[in-house]
Image 1 (cartoon, rainbow, N blue to C red):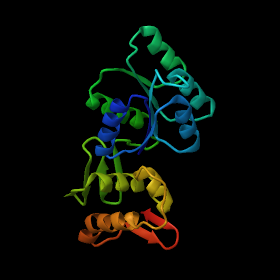
Image 2: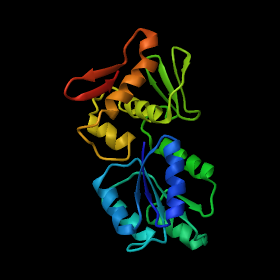
Image 3: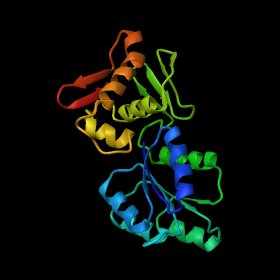
Image 4: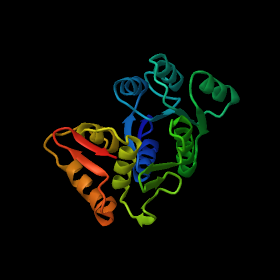
Length: 222
């Protein structure tokens, strides 16, 4: 899952980015309102976390411009402004939730997960299933045929992305953009290496291949 963080305070941004990456999210950071709007319009995100007191454009303006562009991903406001009128204005201009600073990261993460569940079109947004492979979004546990599979955070994020796109071929570029935080470098083999390690865990011990390579195109889980 891909999260856009628009926050001008470097320490706060670093704290949130570190926590989200450890939780398996791919994250992109913008330090001012104009850059935040640009990134929101030019890249695909599953959710945005936006501070209100931003340079160049404030958070209210950022949210309004994102919504005016027809983008409907969940938005969580993160702000030290705790007046009722600020909360009401934030919700009225298009945000989905409002968290007051200072905050516990565990609460922010819970709110992000709740918004992603609500926005999901899956019949059961708490569990992803492909054949006998299961991924539980609540506990972040993965199993196949009832056998628990231990994954590293990046392997988990890769598997979640593939499972959310079951039956669809995803390219290396798409994987790099959604699972990692940087643009595709045709010279790197990081995707192939992670795919290999994932196959060793979710396919090889079970005798039936779910993760397939489509030569010259990408990968598909089905």
